[in-house]
Length: 172
Ligand SMILES: CC(C)(COP(=O)(O)OP(=O)(O)OC[C@H]1O[C@@H](n2cnc3c(N)ncnc32)[C@H](O)[C@@H]1OP(=O)(O)O)[C@@H](O)C(=O)NCCC(=O)NCCS
Image 1 (cartoon, rainbow, N blue to C red):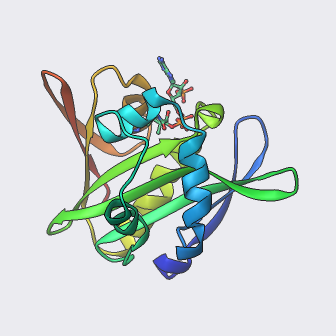
Image 2: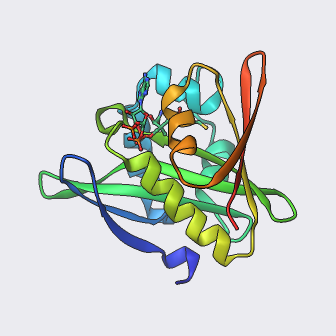
């Protein structure tokens, strides 16, 4: 499947249907709404600093995804008959065959397996594109992110430094 048209159906642990799909340019307002529903702590863990407001340039960077060197997926659920974005994940190719991954799930939907599902689908796309490794920088206290990586079934290695854990995952 072409990465820019990627779509798959998954279920949360409590049985809700979620669509994992490619980010689209028209998702801009829904992405903004999702950020609005995400706690300061989660945004801190994602961006390694206090972050809630984004400049036009930053928004453009997050929305202008080429689906080659920069791939972004969202997770959408039905809420009151409307599809709402509740999570996002992306990878950015950093060097040949290696991409950095990052995730954020709206707090209300954390612990439902959505992070794990996003990683699985990013890995499918990356493998298809010939990548061999995902890397991530994780705050040491971010147990849930480290757990998602550890339980992914992918061969992983971690390097702990003060204030950051470097994770490398073999994807093919
Ligand atoms: C990290 C994050 C992406 C994980 O996504 P998620 O959908 O919540 O994760 P999942 O439900 O797939 O799995 C989370 C796992 O961590 C566990 N977990 C969560 N909080 C935990 C805690 N405080 N201590 C121990 N385990 C914890 C969950 O029980 C689950 O493990 P399990 O599969 O054994 O039950 C999400 O929590 C998030 O958006 N956090 C804020 C942003 C962030 O940290 N981004 C990462 C930057 S690289």
